Image (spheres, rainbow, N blue to C red):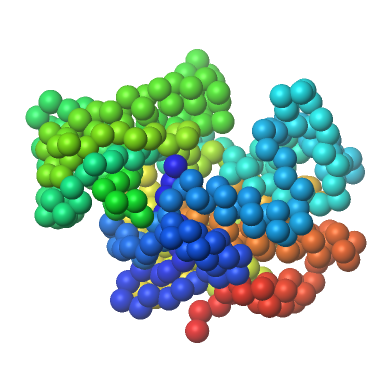
Length: 388
């Protein structure tokens, strides 16, 4: 139920558009339905593209089908068969049982690095040795008087939230959550709840890939959402006559597994806006750390600058025919907290898909691919690989 693409633009005084290509096709498709709008981020993280998530489902499907790809929904990866360092097939679970998918090159876009994990590629487990981002259940509310809501500034909104929590009348673990307008009249979307993303007990570590932890988190997230809604109705102008219309389809997970790639992007890389010889995308989004506690930590890149996303961070170690795209890419916890933005995930997806197609066509392994060929193909397709 996320409803805003961040990462298309850099924040700060010099706003630059830094993601293009297929991501632009997605936004164009939403625009054809009148289902998106641009708006500033609450925390100064750059202009976001807020969309109607129901229309987005149709846009995704239409673009994939028009590209000639076969689509299979309701299939979850259970196992990867590996021979001589190559994935031979994936076993997926469906309503009719298990089936195998055979391919020459694979892309792991599961977010949780499921394919990489089952194939035996080395991964970092978020929360096991360093902090991990918390989980969030988003929710949407209708019948909001938006004009009244806008009479309360961000600072006052956060002050009211903190005061409500400190009074003991409301249980609000996060004290600076946000709400924002949507393309639908009188509907507001929220990002407020905060649920623990990992635990360690009895010598066993669990994170948000564990079904038991996820089950308890889903229940807790929805409970928190109703408490935040109670706060909004009681304490924030414009919400008195509002009503809950939807929870997120599932609880929002920010990080679980991150692969060990040929290169690991670091916090220093992000904050110094490092450029790479093999970069396939750009990111100007700040480090956004939803840590334990009541606040969120933000660290910004130099104004108008970007860190590059290197192809090597999309190539897991030890497997010869696998790319990753999205939040399971190779990065430290801090760097990940910047580059995991949705526009960057789309840029990674286009890069991984193009690279995989070239590898199959040229009969090359990912590490053997001539980067110049990939760079030229991405630029021809409208991707943005460097700032002006």
